[in-house]
Length: 54
Image 1: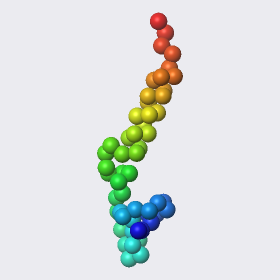
Image 2 (image 1 turned 180 degrees about the horizontal axis):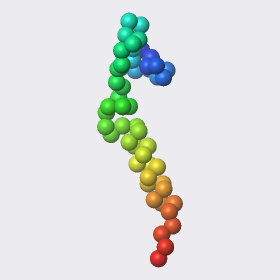
Image 3 (image 1 turned 180 degrees about the vertical axis):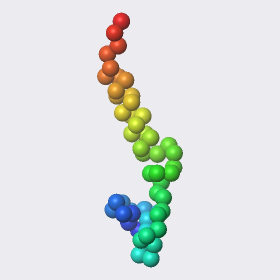
Image 4 (image 1 turned 30 degrees about the horizontal axis):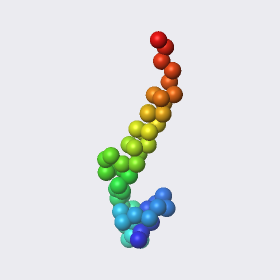
């Protein structure tokens, strides 16, 4: 298994011959993904913590 530049293992990583080549990984192009899920959780918590005046 190859390592991405950020150190995480991924089949979308670079080989030694492709170091200058840009390769997408699932975090950036599979939607919804971990980033979108984190945003949904954050918005839920923010809405839950907000006190609405009557």
